[in-house]
Length: 70
Image: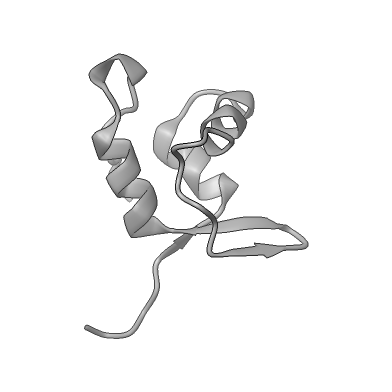
């Protein structure tokens, strides 16, 4: 393990799941969404692994696209 932490803010989550910013806001406010690891003045930050695991666990009806390249 290199010790690097992969983090995601709202912008990265938006790029990952697509849709509107309102959709992203609704996702991160869900009770089952991972807790942020820190809350900064610029916003909340999550561990990428936890967000990705949460996305993979969503029912197909949630329609979150697979990880995009890049």
